[in-house]
Amino acid sequence: MTADLRLIRYFVTVAEEGNVTRAAERLHISQPSLSAAIQQLEAQLGVELVVRIGRRIEITPA
Image (tube, rainbow, N blue to C red):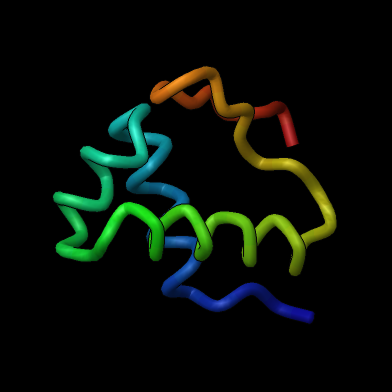
C-alpha cells in the first residue's frame, strides 16, 4: 500500500519542527489530528517513524 502524500507531508513537517504541536500549528490542523495522521502513516508503512519523548519527538532510522 502506498502512503498518502498528505501523510508524508505531515511527517516531514513534524521532522522539521521536532515537535508535533508546532508542526500542527504550521499545518493549520489540530495536534490530535496530526498525531493520528503520523500513527496512520506508521501503520501503513509497518514501521515506527518517531519516538515520542514527552512533547519532543525524535525521528527513527526507519
